[in-house]
Image (cartoon, rainbow, N blue to C red; front, side, top):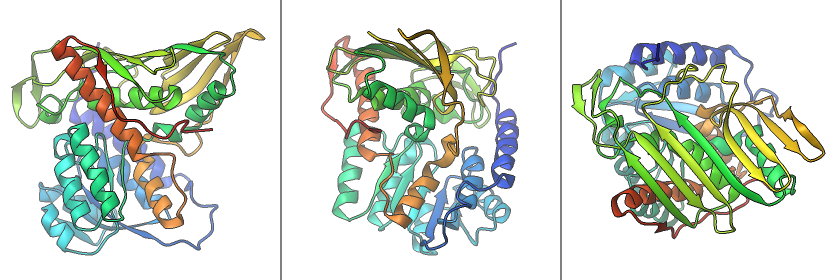
Amino acid sequence: MPRIIDRKTFLSQSTALAAGVLFAPSPFASRGNDYKKIKVGVIGCGSVSRMYLPHLTSSPFVELVSTCDIKPDRAINAAKKFNIPNYYPHIDKMLAGAPFDLMVDLTNMQEHGRLNKQALLAGRNVWSEKPMANSYKEGRALLDLAISKKLRIWGAPAVVNSPQFAFMAQSINSGKLGKVAAAHAHYGHLGPTWSAFFYEKGGGSLPDLGVYNLATLCGLLGPVKSVVAMTSIITKTRKVDDKGTIPVEAEDNSMVLMDHGNGSFSHVQCGFNYFDPYGHEGSGQEKPTVSIVGTKGSMHLIGYDWKPFGVDLATPDDEKGKRYSTDPGTYVWEQGASVIAEALSTGKEPLINAEHALHVLEIIEAARESQTSRKRINLKSTFKWPVVA
């Protein structure tokens, strides 16, 4: 039977995974102690925080100062569970309360732009779950504001941090695939049931699911020059925990074709109508979800780019191919804020880049415009590439 992703199932999976983070050896344990702890405030104490908070707790670069949620019980419970001294029912109170350096925004995606701007205006650095804003224009303004105030803002996802992404990037950059011709990626499930925001205006499968594959493919093949896309709504109404039965306003089915400007094309498909026997947690996924082909080789990422298990590579010298990079190391999808705290503490620039996140946001916006206009849409943004040399 297809897996319906309800809140209870998601939370039970999240709790089990989080326990592994809490009780596993810390990925930071071998490092020295001469670092400054970054004071962190977390806003949004729903499902995603159950993965983020254990990881942040394990980081020696982090001091968790406060939690915040418009449902006060969630902020209180998270603070008590992770021994965080302060909790607030509203961002105004959090920003006026105990001082902190970095706001971690885990709220509904439609709120990200507004809350991230408020944090920057209050002098805080920002790590935002995806997307960092509701439009490219809004995101660009946030980055410009951060620069003007000598602050930093970053946006999820953190897929560029995985060893598998590094292996694929280095294979492409070293010429192992020859001239890259095409790439494909896909990610989908049957859709969450715990909140309406996924299906409301400003939500959708592109910023929730497709964002991972878009970040991976343009991270590997370079900035996108133009986009042609089709989007649709397959399931017209959804029953969700917080509002009952609602009309679906945002796309739940998407196909995005991208031109990287050098003859290479890539394609992403995503949606909330995909039967997936591996479930939301992606455990046991042994099939490729990202494939890249060139004149001298082909390469396939096993598992999802947010939870990779290896990379299969075949070349003329080894036509049957082998599996490489089977160890994810310390990479997990929820590590972004911890990585940014380390960067702020040590001054080491992370691979995650705000311009990359903005570029992905413009791709999503262009895909929707292409569906509406039935035209190919040119992009204006770019980012530093290659991500991994």
